[in-house]
Image (cartoon, rainbow, N blue to C red; front, side):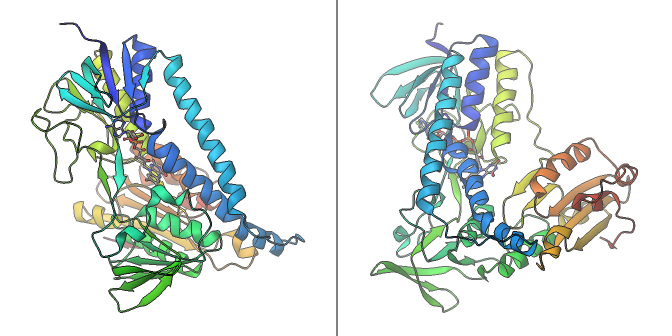
Length: 452
Ligand SMILES: Cc1cc2nc3c(=O)[nH]c(=O)nc-3n(C[C@H](O)[C@H](O)[C@H](O)COP(=O)(O)OP(=O)(O)OC[C@H]3O[C@@H](n4cnc5c(N)ncnc54)[C@H](O)[C@@H]3O)c2cc1C
């Protein structure tokens, strides 16, 4: 049977672009890709990249204050959102161009349109044109959803936050996950008065309790009004503002409300019904360890499969798919011990098990220290950092590492290598410290603070 292509990829985000360009450029496969919006997907256009640039922008006010404390004769001026947003848009245009060129230069044929499946080997583009392929890869990502409450349409999501006409004076952020917490810090740093509601008992559910506790304390210290155990009851327009009634009885006016209350996989309206592709409880595409669906010619990678929703994971899954299908090297995706960073202020870096998860699995020793780092302590700040190792009592392996500190993301990338290699506490101990840096504490933790 002959097909138009060896591979048709739906979705030009992190996972889809990587799989398409490697399959075409390195294995010689005939590849096409359809993207309905902007090339680069969530990460590049409305996720990691613009967010991190906003984190950088938001940190300068504090840096200027610290510089004053170090003797610099400078004054913090006002933050100009228009200037920043203009530069941000230009950067995103540039990056989108890079992604388009990568595909073009590797011989991938692109269609700037929505695509859906018609059968196990056929894709229909929005103008009715049909293309056949030996393999179809679904890499359609996910999207934010708003809760079903009265007035929710008045709020925005992370998709819209990059396009605000002007910065609000008062903003409510709803949610306690990493996206909500990161934007609370960003907006606060940009001079917005930020209130955050989270219905749970503590933000950053699923991460180490001690680490998220410190992030939460520091966010409050930085001026974010964090209300735990609180949710939005209903919202209504009042002039230019939004009146929000909360479950704790509060009633307040905000200029903007952002919901960061969850994301769903883009698996609906793909024509999957009746094809035999299984969908999970959240609507995600169910795949095996090779990212293959129940239909042998159809694979899925990235957020649409709702495994670990991070850019480097989508990319890994894309590479493993190409190895498996186009290089004859069946490659399961390794989802164990993925280091990750939360770009809150302070930043958090984490790899492996939390204290709570590890203690539920086996007896462990906890090594931890919390202190005021030199740089900000000198500037008179009370900010604390945390360095924490979770160690197996049985084999002394470091099962988890949690860092709350400026630059924690950079640090955890490197700790991740040691933990992935199976380093023991004694391997950490016999590594000579770098002095004076915050991370030296990770190799000088002598006594456990507790057993769990
Ligand atoms: C605010 C925010 C911050 C984030 N920060 C980080 C971070 O710091 N670090 C990190 O690792 N991850 C971060 N992420 C997560 C990361 O962006 C995703 O995990 C990653 O983009 C997933 O890649 P993907 O290829 O699965 O999907 P996506 O990048 O979402 O790409 C999917 C693409 O498919 C297109 N598409 C969808 N349906 C169709 C269709 N039917 N036809 C054609 N095209 C279609 C979409 O337009 C999109 O371009 C963040 C996410 C958000 C929302």
